[in-house]
Length: 244
Length: 244
DNA sequence: CGTGCGCTTGATCGGGTTCAAAACGTGTGG
DNA sequence: CCACACGTTTTGAACCCGATCAAGCGCACG
Image (tube, rainbow over all chains, first blue to last red; front, side, top):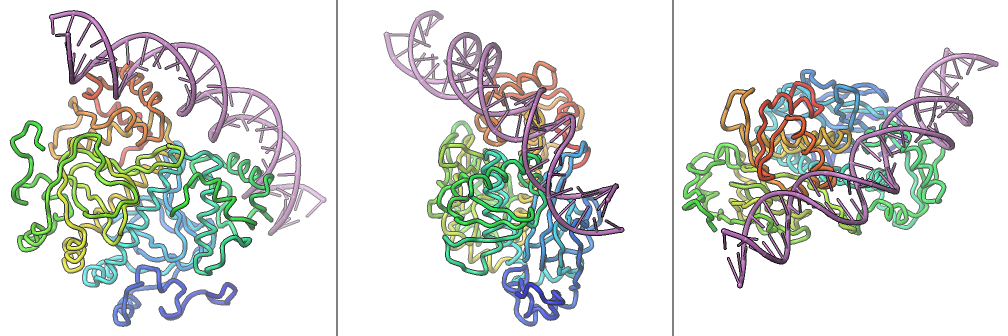
């Protein structure tokens, strides 16, 4: 995928950057054509809402580019992010009328949308789609469970380190670069969004990032560009053991 | 092993207490027969492990009776429950070799198990099963997301109230009893298990339960038998608004 | 050059943890 | 039936991590 192209919208599915990992991953040519008939692209600027909680669902779809966040808000305003959607992740739930939570574009986002009703009929008659959706949902459930551990038991420092390694890993999984080498990535989240993800306040996020900088574990430029000289050192701070 | 009852094991699927809600819910007679060929029952005593994290998965299955807990443990011993499985809930993940987390019987448990390999082939050729599994997984993902909100943003008191209403609701969903009437239920969890569920210490759990007793919102007998004179009052303490 | 938003830093506060001990319940054996 | 022991739960006192309240900083943009 080319990061400075004039038009990021893939004109045809076989040029799509998420072709191999999205909900359509297992589809063959004929199935793709069916999907193609009910699909359209939408773009959102950073900060814009994609779906409001309680709204009637009009579409489901895949994040093609950018980052979107699911979040839930309590009456008094406390909010918790409950999903962080990166390219290839799926948005929306077939078999449901209204959206259970807000979806917001955290950075500029391109979505590949499918109109709800036709998608559901396709889902019912195309095992390649429903199987893939099941796989993806199970994966998401697994990561939700890791997230539960993070929220329930990790310290602020461990939470920050975990989030940074997660983003680093997810942005570098395509480029199979050797471990041990310096890794750079852009934070697609504000401090506040990070706080919502981690169940912290933005002040605590800021303080912990400062602490990691002070100790030389990470370096940050312009608040968003993170470089990690030795990912191993950062990983040690996550509290996780050597698996995953 | 049957403790009192003559035999809780359903001899045939149509007498099964979870027939309408388990993974087999959509199956017709022929499909049930197929499932029946690869199924067997297992029982576990309270406190016993059902699956160890890292073990090779031999079966998947449904909780028929009792309560089981998924949990993850960090190197230093901190543990977080990441799933609370009540009757009809599904255990195990098709398409995976080894178990990612511990599964423990929290009370005496009866499981309806399917051998892994044959279940997977059945899954592939029986849309009624895979569709149901997708539904159930999406539901579980939804409840995991509510759980994230609980762990990330709720106070200790709200957490306790949320757990109690959850259990009350889940144990009374069959019996469509009128709201507003006194509700009694048995806690299937120790204080420690509740703490692991809620991301608290057992002392805090105990203190918050005592506070709710002191205020007359709940009454507790023999540490396990809870009665709620007015479920509405308890619900007010959860921090949730009037939906769900 | 000011204005605003996102981020950092400081000082104080408090909810939940930690450590410790007592109370309760349950089961066991004399 | 009581005495004892063990596991669970309750309660108490001190502490600490992260929240809260409050400035101040830096950069983008009009």
